[in-house]
Each structure stands twice: as C-alpha cells, then as structure tokens.
Image 1 (cartoon, rainbow, N blue to C red):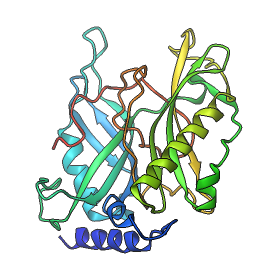
Image 2 (spheres, helix red, strand yellow; image 1 turned 90 degrees about the horizontal axis):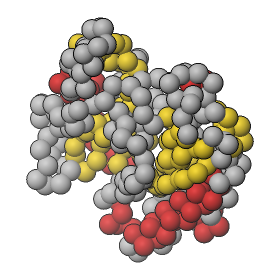
Image 3 (cartoon, rainbow, N blue to C red; image 1 turned 45 degrees about the vertical axis):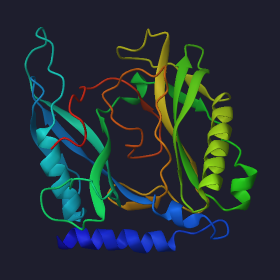
Length: 293
C-alpha cells in the first residue's frame, strides 16, 4: 500500500529527527515508543437504534489516503447506544473528532486496515469525541494562570502536553484534578522521561488550583453540583499545536483515568481539535471499541 509506506517513511524520518535532550545513552529504547498522530474531524450520522448511517470528513481530499480508508472502514461498523423508547426516532448528525495514530507494531499485532501495509507499523484510531457542547452550556474559564515550566525540563528544552481532567464546583473553583496523560516531544532515557512526565503533571495540577470558572448558563447541567472538563496544557516553546489533518510526532505517556471521572461518550483522552476545555459527558455513547471494524 503505497500511501501507507509513505506515512511510515515519514514517521521513520521524524523519529530520527526528534531532538534528544540528553546524552544518547538510554535513548534508543525510547525511540521505539515514538508515534505519529493526526486529528481528523467531521460528522457522523447516528440512527435512533445506534447504527451509523452516514459519515462526512472535513477536508477529506487533503487527508492521507490510508487515514481516510481506516476511518471509512471503521466508523460505519461502530454502534452507539440506542435512543430511549420515549424519544422520537430520528437520525442525528453528530460532530466527531478522532485521533489516528501510526506507531511501530508488535510482531503479533493484527493489521488495523484490510489492505496490506508495512508489517512494522500499524495505523489505528485511538481516541474519539462525539458532540459539540455550546459555550454557554459548559463552565466558562474566567482565569487560568499558566503552570510553571519545570526547571529541569526547561533546561533540557523538553516540550510536553499534559491532558488533565478537572471537576469544577459551583463556586468556580477546581475541586478535583487528575493528569490522564503526558506526551513529550523530545527524547531522553526512560528514567528521565518518567521524571519529566511527573514534573509536568505536578506543575499542571498545582496550577489548576488557581483556575476559576463561571457556571454554565443554559442546558441540562445548569443545576448540577459540579461539572467535569478535560483540558490540554501545552508546554511547547516554539512548537505550535497542529491543525486537524496534520501529523504530530511525540513520545506518548501512559494513559490513566481519574477514578472519580464520570462515564462518558468519549473514548481516549486526546481527541482535541483545538486547545480549549471540553466537557465530559453528553452525546451518544459509543458501545463499540475504537478498534472494532
């Protein structure tokens, strides 16, 4: 599959070009963890019984052919929760944000797409979000003092993105917070990368204690005791968050879920089309696993 080979080649070049923040000793093992991802946005049409009846991708002609093939083969096979019997039957057009990842594949991994691809790589959908909450139906950020850049990471020129989930109380203060994932954009040894991730998580969690929000002014959540949001926190130097449809290369951190976070229709933690907060909950619940299909 020519397009897949080209993407895999891009990842190989990016891995070689990814800067090392420390001496080369111990970096080789971390290079094997590097992955390349792309955010894909569009709309999915969901029937009342949970079947997918249609799919539209934004700027589809500009996306790599293997990415389009993966999405178009996978999404129509997904199933969402059916609408309750007392809700009028209708097909809903729902905004969709996906994150597609290319990573080195374990030797035993099954291909994620039907056509042949290089055996050493696998292309998968790893994160998804469905729905689009109006700004006034979710807590509005009033003040968000940025976190302090960890001294060690700053000295090593180590960029990062931390994905946080926070619970906001009615007084606008953050009641609970949790670092779900920390992705790094340069290389070090495994011990150094673990230390950097912890430092980025700690400084982000310290910063959110000073954040303030205004409650939503309309919608079903207006009277709630608290609200849960997912927020990406960037430490990027001169590296900008890429637009949907463009590749990003990084070393992913372990994915964790806050034990107190609500069950949501989202899958994964990093399906962000921009850098703003997004609410947890709402929308149709995806019953299928992202790898289904």
